[in-house]
Image (cartoon, rainbow, N blue to C red; front, side, top):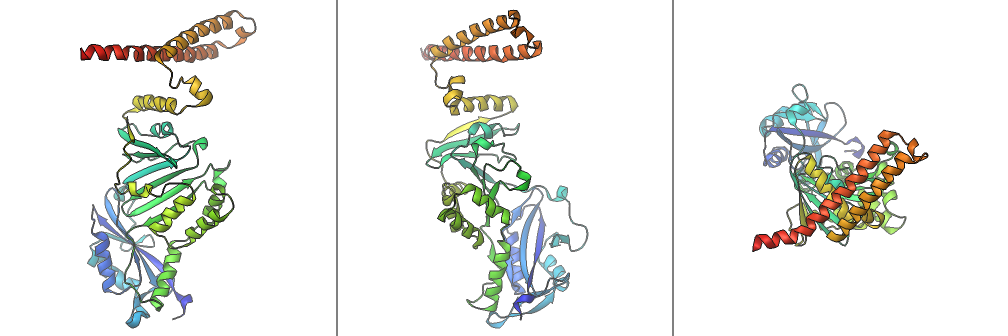
Length: 402
């Protein structure tokens, strides 16, 4: 057979409800027919379980001839897709079979029938990443963030994955790792261009840990060469991702190695090396599989919008340095908080009087002046109350224990 004749086709088997054994069932059916290709691990959605199969064909016609593995792993003509598709659907027990996205027996099922993909575990990591931005991204429902630092920076694992993470440009670059069933996805986000619609702001590496060949082929056989071609097609990388690598890594050996890993077959080993090149901890992958976090990790609990705001303010104060640390009084003693707050309130009273009586300052619109004074007094009252509370805490604890 002429290699130029070959093409590939996607078959998506969709099963009702949760079916952990779906990939094994599809594999058994396709292997029985000795078809050439790969099967991904089962992916769970809200209402269904999906298994994707990538099959080699002799052409890219609408009804192509499938490739089969013959004696000595030579490639031979199989049946046409339409001759076999209904048999595959029936034997696997799938509710739907999509051929390149089109349903075999009717309309394509809608998103409301399938539901969203479930992200099982999620991790954020970065040397400039801020906890406060992630806690503010949490939904109104309860969530818990496990937080710790290592040599590569801050690591955050939300118990419930975040749909949107509002990480600012100043906190980038950062890494997100997520696992959905057997699919592991790493995305490294750059600071991004001024016009992101013209340029991607992340590079991603995705691997299906349970992806397998339908049948193994002998080394050097026609079937093995075709499987390698299918692997390359599956791992195709868009040019924009190479441009994102250029943004994230300075020119040199690390940049070139990262690009070569993107071109190479996907593997867990290559993923770990990929993360290392960008300065992230490759052991982070283990946390997605349930590895124990460091003993010094702390947990942050968030529940409801108001609580999320309070927690975010506390984390902002913890993270503040330099001028922001001075403004937020990070690490100040109760006495310093009280004295500074009294000074702020006194200065506010003087400033308010000046804005009312000074001919130059009196030109300021009243709504603007009132808003300014509201935040000025609020700052003073908040830290005064906090200082008093922290000063009284030891006394209250002593009273309780006596």
